[in-house]
Image 1: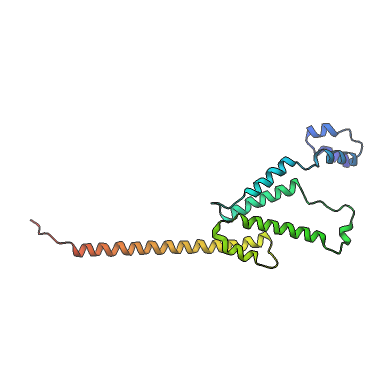
Image 2: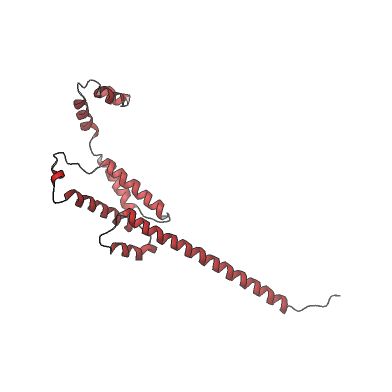
Length: 185
């Protein structure tokens, strides 16, 4: 029954190549040997793209979304290996936690490396935290700074516009008062 279900869930081109498997285990083994390999060219391109990611003119959220898509693609192509012997379940040195923390720190560093220079001070602040926050918490902090900057810029623009209006208004009053009146003929 499992064998039929697996075969029916495959595309016709793949199914035609494995349809004579006698057991579901045999089918699974053949599929893993054929398709369960790391695609080195794709992994190379994904990691190259990841290294070239930078915020540039993107919003913070667009930049982070681009990074996250890249990280998820890499995890799909080259996932973290799983323990098949069960030793990690009784591990007392927390090796898996340390590996996951290392990956989390790597993602945070990649996020911070690609930020525009306007985030230099907050980048320094985040890097000085102990323990380092995960990338999504750092993003929350960065978004607060981005929102603050946007509010400051809009208030600054409004002040410049108001000052320009007052200046134009005052100069038009002065010119109306100081213009000589010519007698009409």
